[in-house]
Length: 427
Image 1 (cartoon, one colour):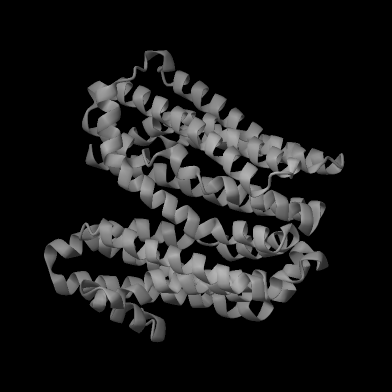
Image 2 (cartoon, rainbow, N blue to C red; image 1 turned 30 degrees about the vertical axis):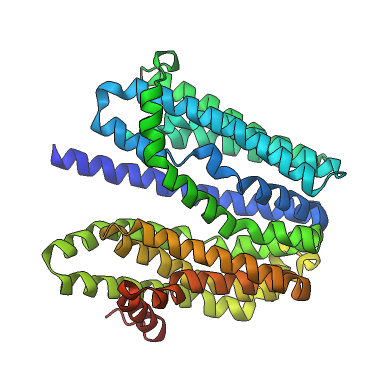
């Protein structure tokens, strides 16, 4: 039984990893093609719309992912009530998000009809993301391969459609509709996969008591989700408002290349997390020894990527995206260093989670978000996209490393991170 369980976990992880690799490879290839086809101005407007909608994403997801999976595992007898309630909550959250988004964009750009359409088409997809509730069931049963089947079928189908759109010289709005279609097709795929496994959505039922229970657990995650999305995407929105769409287009390609490898440290830390928890139960010395090695490895991994990219960033941008995006080279050379702090932040989360210091994690991210917004406000008018790149990199550093020295229980972590950045020894 234990072997079978371990085997299921490994197979499930393999499916998820394969999903990320496929989406990264195919998505990057087609994303580059779309960026070259649209050009900096239109690609910038599309990137602005995606970033703007993502700011409200936490209202659609409601932080329910892990909570619903946990409740199904703990109480399988109430699975239909849990799933039904989560579906209704996500449906309401998606609708609320759509209304908030359309109200906000109407205030920011009252006479820009094209932006209204782009944002609206992208935002309405949030309502259909309520069907991702089915994925919670597959996660609870360690059967993520069915989600991968459904989502990747939609992804590959719409990818082909995007290629056809480019060959047909389609307008910008067509790509927004393609993105919406991917969400709808993915939802249909999940419904079919759920039925193949012998279950039906019509068996779900909602419960006010269950809704209160789910929301009481998820509201801190909603706040965290809002802060994290502002932290990650406010730069593109502020850049679009303070400079223009073309600068967003140039900046966004630098962001995409800088972030393309982030799934690697995240996957690695997820795999090592159980050993960190185990070490804490054995001894404090072993716990901190393993953490230091993890920090060192994360730093070394970041240096291996950041150092060469710093010197070839301009060449990479011109080869991949073309001369129209040449200005993204210096931005990429700066943004690639944010990966160092992203790596260390992911590793530090193992420490904070093991000690159940989720509140501390939220505060450091919140402070980093504030720093990011302030620096973007100050630097974007002076330096445009480069100012946004500098602001993002500094904010990541502050949230992960600098903030440690403002809270005494994190002093030791701050020194360990400093050591990892200066001398990342892993032997």
